[in-house]
Amino acid sequence: MEGQQAQKVNEAARQFAEALTEPYEKVSDHSLSAQALNAELTQGFFNAVVSNLYRQAESNREMTQELIEQAQRGQEVSQTLTQESVNAHMRFLDSMFFYYRQSMEEAER
Image (tube, rainbow, N blue to C red; front, side, top):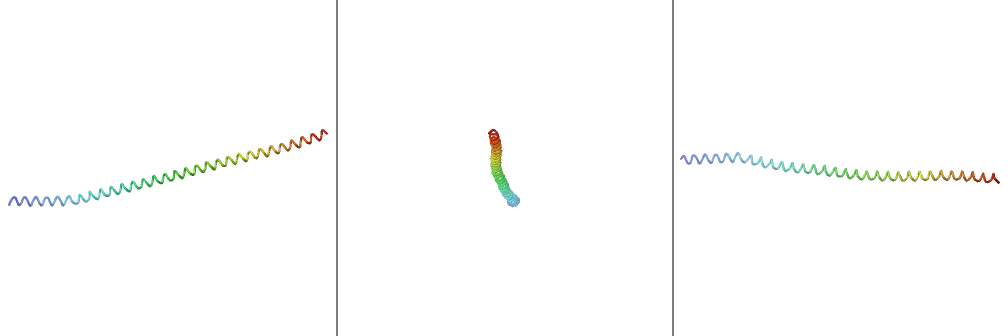
């Protein structure tokens, strides 16, 4: 009878241990699932941030290139305008000297 009593106690202890172990295993499984999901979400977040930063950098590069091209065009226009202005002044001075020379030649005659 003592053997049966010990067997019953051992069986009850085994069932009690299983009853305690099962919820802990479920909590552990849920915890691992939550960690995996958090890792995926974190990775997705950082991938989105990096992608956004890349797009912004590319946009800034394109805008900088456009500004450089506009500055070059402005410089070219300024040089052309300056050259035309100098040419106009030179023609004006040439015409004045031409008129002066002609007046001097007529005065000498």
